[in-house]
Length: 234
Image (tube, rainbow, N blue to C red; front, side):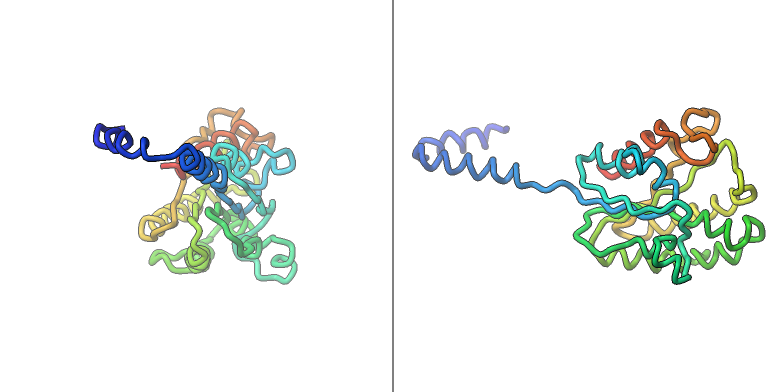
């Protein structure tokens, strides 16, 4: 508190009756208590859904670090673009997981399963461009624009390298380019942030990965969730 403010308080406090001072303190405390926590919606694929059943998933960790209320609607196996009636009805289309609400933050990922399902992680240039083209148009930018219209801050979580590719063998080059384009989109879009989970995941540290070598272990999820919270707080 600077000297001007202190002197101002010395001038004003003597004129406060005990009742007025009590009312002032009450309203200050009421304002602090009534401050609502952040409301976070998470949508995406199994990277965000992993450990959801135990509360150790990435969005839950992020919410704990921020003291936020989190709804994790991510679905394992979800594609970003799955226009089948079954996919949209069951949340296997990432876009269908979104529900309008008073969200402060929307955390989202998705796309890896599109490469796996639509082109078997080989010759996937058309799939990549359909999701997000070099000029930053496509299904992903269009959906992110819709999310931004809700007034929420949007965080896109990029993919990390895995010690074991499993069925995603061949997908890595496409995912690297996919994330690069999304990072460029975020740089050009107010209210959209790209956070690369690869910044905190090390394929040489096996304990950061689940038994399949692809999804995060509880330790890995904790690292990513904490990093997301720190990125949002900055």
